[in-house]
Length: 227
Ligand SMILES: Nc1ncnc2c1ncn2[C@@H]1O[C@H](COP(=O)(O)OP(=O)(O)O)[C@@H](O)[C@H]1O
Ligand SMILES: CC(=O)OP(=O)(O)O
Ligand SMILES: [Mg+2]
Image (cartoon, rainbow, N blue to C red; front, side):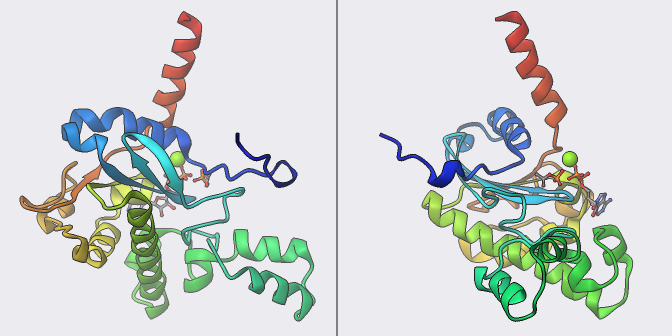
């Protein structure tokens, strides 16, 4: 029997419509591999990862709120819980100020001090911009490693969302850090924006699939209407 959640609090995860769409289209793109161990990286203003086993979510990086997991445009992602206590107890910050700091003034914007937009940071020559993008890619790769443990390995990695679909440099930086898993990115296919961007012989398939949450909503409403 499932245990009742503490105070009704649940680990929700987010970007579910995006992940549902990927799980739906993946078999057409990679066949039987779609039934294996897949990590999907939804990288937009908000960013999260989802581990799919047999097409079903078994772990995600966001939890009760959209603050957890990856570093994002303006959100910190996971931090030491003691940091929050320190800011309140030792620095005298109000809870509302901490919430504003972690949600709206952290992430790519906070680290770079320049922008939350990957396009602006990619075009900047400031070392802080480079540092922010490197940290963003490092956090994605590190959390992908964590989800690979949850899955017991990795057969496919999918990039989606505005950054996942368009930022070839971020994809390359993430994939380089995951090469030890047997993931071999094809730099040309990645730069040219193909949907399949791993090299022949890569033990991990790497794909870029456009997010289509609207299509998922339409399909679900269609199912309800025709039921
Ligand atoms: N051509 C591009 N190159 C790099 N990054 C891009 C590009 N286009 C959009 N982005 C990034 O995508 C982000 C928005 O992603 P999107 O998935 O549209 O957001 P949302 O979470 O609001 O749906 C922007 O913050 C920007 O950093
Ligand atoms: C859940 C979430 O972070 O949404 P968005 O990516 O639209 O900010
Ligand atoms: Mg979106």
